[in-house]
Length: 321
Image (cartoon, rainbow, N blue to C red; front, side):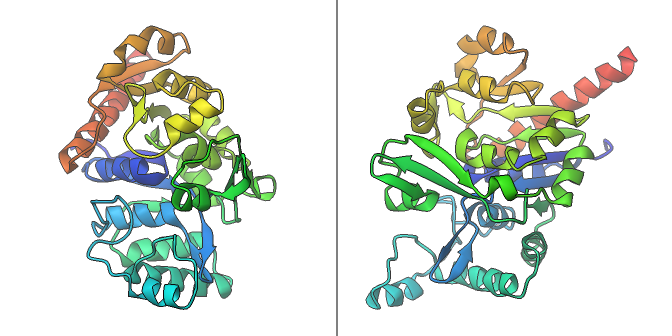
């Protein structure tokens, strides 16, 4: 068996969770995941961390596979009661899910570090990889539309991504500090992978925490991003619509241009091969595969191809030296 490769994954959303599952399935990978916390918000007096919970539930294999988030075999009696009492219930939180949000909120109220809470929750669910936060401070994505500013969850869930996006902002970034765990995972990695997550609202809020982007750029690790686009479309979410609205190319080349300063290679779907020359012109190597992750085998295969590429690059470097 190969010496375990230390892999640090930057991840948010369903695409990030799928990539995490693929890497976690490999026997020769020591995986750390830095998850997006800029989607976090308060609902019914409880602090909800959607992307961190999706990572936790996915790796614990209790995720609702049909919708890609939440817990399988879920009920919604608490929401029914809240609705009867006149509360807004557009943020669909299940009964089992409420238990985690109650626990998180109670511990935050006691002054516990969010990173420690995320670690303890992952351990309780039997998750082996480390789930890390980029910051313990509150950072929150805001979306400006023609009707004004919305929280990310208002835009994503309540409005179903329908309004045109005019501007994005992440409140709290200027005062945020990176967690030592995230910086350690980046500095100690053999391979850093940027998941096929929304580049604007899942990955940027991680990289834009002061100190994180510089740490990734300075890390000795090989850095590979996975494009969330297949033929100019995303599998899930509003990344294509958002990038187009904000003047960026909504395709693999747009992803290459956004990440070119911090990555060495981009994994693209085979259907995007015609963009290869332009992506290489950005100074990037190209990996090409079937990137749609429908099954466990798809996730593990794609992850294995990225790790195999990294091992081959390590071998070439050793031979050259």
